[in-house]
Length: 402
Ligand code: CS2
Ligand code: MG
Image 1 (cartoon, rainbow, N blue to C red):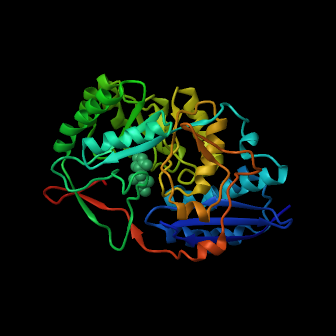
Image 2: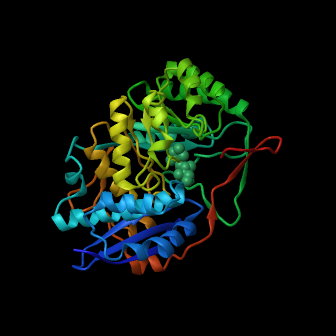
Image 3: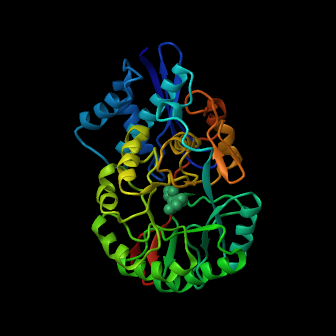
């Protein structure tokens, strides 16, 4: 069995996605996601112009060798574009392997370790009352873990606040929109958000929060301390993590669990964070961290240090990545939680999938491979639309992390 063809499909059913479809000479095919939000066409070109020509003739079962060939063979290593392209190839090959053997991918990476994949949903709103209503809605749907995000009083708009009840999509067409930010107003508000949620819902539900890379280590430590009494499940991305050692300061001053990693693209981005036990959850995803082959290495390293997995699962990782994440989540021993930001009905129609939600959990299904497809004819009706994430500035105009 050899790879005979591969093509890149760019479509925008509600948002942009880059998908790689790999075919073999016996007619088996597999899918991989290569979406990098706001930089989609760079990965599409990397794949079309530089990777697909090298794939023809490859052994689809040799996932480790192909991974190393694309990573070491390029000479230029790491970075989101390179690693998303490698991920798309890797995940598509795992899909093919599963189909060729007639088993879901999780059977190839350890089999089932649990009955289902516990997920968290996104409760958000313009103010505290709206967030409370949103949490109640998720609890009615059976969720046992909910992320809290709310508009900060005195700021016009901010990350993490959805449009409509169940959907959140931060990217928008055209030039990036600009938002304004005040860390002081935010720090004043978040403890009140948790206080209200615990008063309304008690301590049975897990509550999470994402600080979206906006704090200094000292600010993060301050916030972590103030939140301890509300027992958050985690505080996510409090400080940009390029400087991994900066988390020593955060860790020293708070027992609030820390989750990091949605922008990591290699094990080297978290090696120190994991081995010094500076974080509790690693949020790397298959698409942005080099596919299943590489993410399994991250999970196995993390297992040694009591760090659990928590794959990124926003709308900008396609149903192909969600399917891959669920195969991974059901199998790895040190699974922690899975983010589940629902895709729009348009996205789900283009990517029919076997995974399904039931009572606070996602289930990967038992179809061979990943259990996800792409309807290419339908995808053609949704051409690429240039879109970007917002840019963030402090109140005095200084560019800040978004
Ligand atoms: C967020 C994401 O899911 C999360 O935790 O941080 O929605 C993030 O903003 C987007 O994936 C950016 O592309
Ligand atoms: Mg996040």
